[in-house]
Length: 68
Image (cartoon, helix red, strand yellow):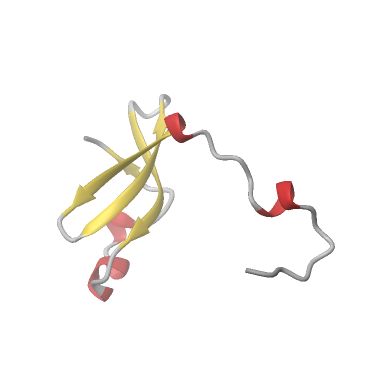
C-alpha cells in the first residue's frame, strides 16, 4: 500500500493499545469495545458486519454504551 501524504507514519497508523479494546460478537455483528469506567460498561468504537441491517440498529452505533 502506497500513501501519498505529507503526514508521517505515526500520524496515519496510530498505535492502539490492544489491551485497551475488547472484541465481542452480538448476533451477526462483531463489536470493538473500549472500557468506559464512568458508565460501568463499554463504549462501542467500531462495528463489523456483513448484514446491512446491523448498521441501522441504533443500539450498535459507535459511541453507544454496551453492557456485557
